[in-house]
Each structure stands twice: as structure tokens, then as C-alpha cells.
Length: 399
Picture 1 (cartoon, one colour):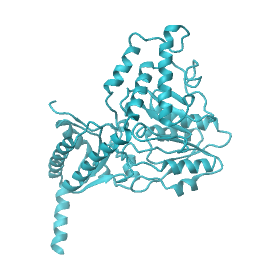
Picture 2 (tube, helix red, strand yellow):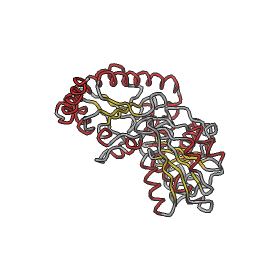
Picture 3 (spheres, rainbow, N blue to C red):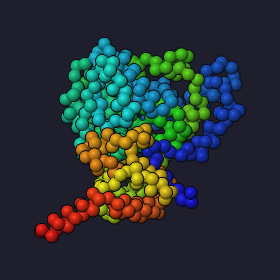
Picture 4 (cartoon, rainbow, N blue to C red):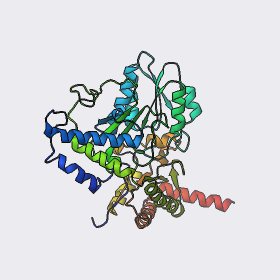
């Protein structure tokens, strides 16, 4: 393939060269198990704890509140299942939203089968949860509120500070899936009243297969994996030293010039949004126009099937998606797009483009030019679009 423009950074990001270099020694010379007692293993242990400190620093918390996991889905599962089990004597009710990642939604469905009650909050047309509805849903037996920091499909950033304040006011624990936000926006767990937070390294330039769960001191959460004493007895299994080291380096790099970098990405994103909405008729931007991730643009194109769009973009060297990579094999429209009120026929024509700091204005112009031509071609083959145009012409003639 001569040209490659990668616009699926919400699915995964490239490992930064500096991250890879940081990891290499722990595959080769420094391969000791960090839980071993001899001196050779101490290098690995020190590297793991250094990475833990870097993550804690990014969150404004202490290192002993950070637990390494296999990624965001494991962290979500641990936080929600563990919380509902540990606080079962208080109650078995939890609150979440209809637009969460499936790592949260499927966990909630599992818990419902175990006798828990789950309130799934609606969101508005921009994907924002109502604070009034959330507070009204709290009961005496409510144990947990789990609301994602930023939506992985439409990019909307939720009012996390306000949600945290409501949870604290009512004595309810607050978990947030920050997989898309961590490394891209400043997060202080104390300022935002977050009790548990999930993140995954491969969303911000780190390796796949490693993440973490922040657990505030005092939150009772039992072990998620039983076995050895790793992660202070909370998560058994030999530590993924190279992955943890790589995540630590990616955290360090993400923290550097974060505000400047994300503003630059947002400028390119805004150019993409403006061009698509200006140049392609019957296109719709999904998610909040301002209160969104700096790298996310999600559109729906009427009279278009998203799968055909993705295939034809791929032929032009453009990597994109129609939503979450975790549901790419599904024929059903996105649950997120349905939750914000889109009908099935429009939700099927979705396209998610997620940028990185490497994405240029020239890249975007190429993508939009190709996208415009592809949309025109696909609509030219659609009898529904032809009927629609005739109907529009009839309305104009009648006027």
C-alpha cells in the first residue's frame, strides 16, 4: 500500500519508539521476576515501582493506590464486580449509563443475573448524562456509580467533576472508565472525587495488554485474580515487566506538553469537522461539538452503509472505524448512536475518525476529498437516495 493514513487511534495507538526502547532491556538482559528475592530481580522490581510512581503522579495520588492489570476491560470488570461483592451488605444497586463501553455494560448484565439491580441512565442527543437524573436514581442501597470519562465512539466528555461530587454527597462510590481520556486530558482523582479509575496503555502510545486500576485508599476491593501475592495481594500473576515499563514511559511522554499537544490535535480535528459538514451533504456530527475529546470526530452519512464506507476508505489507504473496535464484527448499529436518539437507518451509516499528533491538515484534506467521492459513489447506487432527491425536488416545485 503506497499511502497509509491511520485515523483509528481510539482503537489503538502506535507504540512510540522511545517506549519500545525503554521496554527492550526487560525482554533481554533484565528479565528477572520482580517478585524474586535475589539482587538480579531487583532491577525489574525497581522498574515496575518507577512506572507505578509515574502513573500515580499523573493522577495526583500515591503509588500504593495504583494496581497494574492486563488492560481497560480487566480494570472495569475488577472495579465493578469487586465493588458489588465487597459492599453487598450495604446493597446491590449500581448506576451506569446506556453508552458505556461493553466492558462495563456486559459486566452489569452479568451482575444482574447474580441478583444485582442496575439503573441504566439515558443520555441526551449529545451523549451527556443528566446530573438531575443521576442524583434521582440514587437509593439507600446504591453502592456504585460507574460513568465513563469520555465516550469511545462519539468523543463526548461527561461532567465527571459534578458526578463525583454527587457520589461523595450521597456516600456512593464512583468509578470511571477513563480508557479514552487518560493521557489526553489532565485528571486529578482527588479534585474530581474519583474512587476508582480504569485505563489502558495502548490508548496513549504504550503497549497492548497492560493497564491499571486506581483504587482510592479505604475502598474495600478484594483480589480479582487469586494466586500469588503480586500487586499487594490484589492481582495474582507474574508482573508484565516490559509492558508496565512501557506504560510508565508512555505516561511520562503523555504528560509532557499535554495541553499544547491536545490543542494542536483539536485544530486538525476541527478542520476535519468543518470540511465534512461543509462539503458532504446530509452528514451529521455525533457527540458534543465542544465538550469532546480533542482527537475524535464521529459522523453519520444518510443513505450509506458504514461497512461499505470503511472498505472503500481502506482501498484508499485510510484506516477508520464505524465505532468501537470491540464490536466491529457486529451487524447491529452502535448502541451509543441509538442511545443519543438516531434511528437505525442513520446509525448504520456511521464513521469514526480519531487522530493523533502525527495527523496533518494535508492528511485531513486527502481523507475528506476521498470520503466525499466515496459517499457520492455509494449514494449513486442507492435507490433510497434517488427517491429522497426526487421527493426533495417535488417539495421545492410545490413551493
